[in-house]
Length: 117
Image (tube, rainbow, N blue to C red; front, side, top):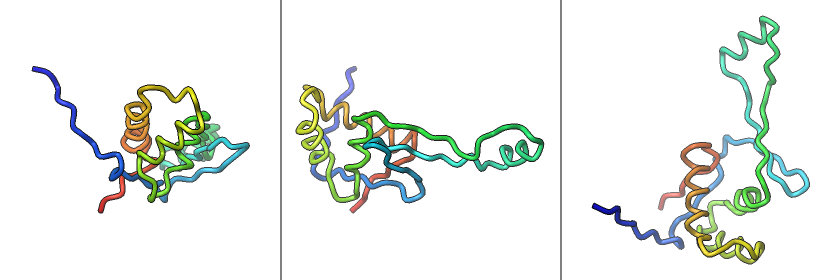
């Protein structure tokens, strides 16, 4: 029994940045700032264990480009077109890879969220 692919309308699929996510731009790269403020971390700091107050995740060129274009108004199709225009090597499977990356940012990293109508 094979899996059936669901048809996704890329023009209707829109994402926005999670307003709780802190980030900064540095030389065109997006750097995600994650506070390390869990109660265990705070307690260990009081015991003089060296735990940083924040960690940083630096996105690569593609990831930074996609994250900068996610604004709550652009559809996945528009982001893909911009990506193909910027990078010639975007490739044959552009939208499949873009959907996987956006899904990862949404469900695993919690950096973006889907806009619902």
